[in-house]
Length: 280
Image 1: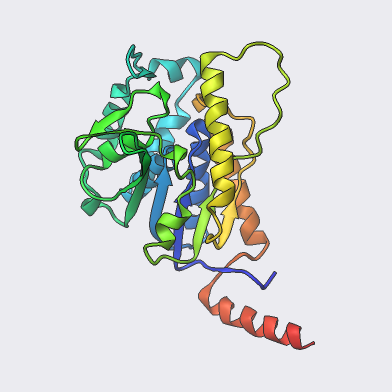
Image 2: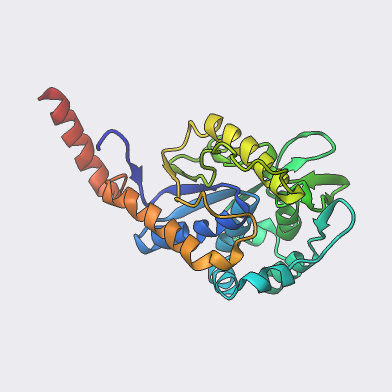
């Protein structure tokens, strides 16, 4: 219990990709704040980048209220159909961002934000942390075949989950410690349905396989990992917002109950206890 703990006054967050599963990040952040945690910086990929940006802009309540208003029908009414590059154009999503956070720049945010996208032309991970926040988010969420690739600064971008689904190392490489990772990528169960998968099902499962593998190899520098139990959530299950947000809260409560996050004064005490225990 005392071998690993996190000073709650000096936390940085790495929020993972996961489409609708990303709503769990809202519950995670709300619970951390309610417990008195101080978040110094945040990095995110895809859905994680969106929630990270809302938090860094001081607007997390807006996206929470917006998502809680969704019904199953309303979800698809909020998407604009495209016939090139992906079946969702992304204009309605961008319009919602502009309504909520405006044409904000990274320099205007309350805390440092790092958004991971995949540079489609170069075939590599790219961390966006300057310029337009909305352009960075639109780049990060561009799931291949679902959202149109986003053209920004002379380059096409697609989903950051293809290269770094939980950006722990993005924070670690910039000197942040006490990194809490929120992973939404559970185990990929064996497919038992004998029928031919639909295009959407094929894309969704392909992304799940890629992110599950990458996640397992890139979180070594996290001080703690939160894993909400939301494997049953589909890509567009935005109407399940309340249950998903609540699960984010529940999974975060667990690390406090287990003594994983402590006050700075408690940290010294736990160190003494650990030393005495080892001598005993």
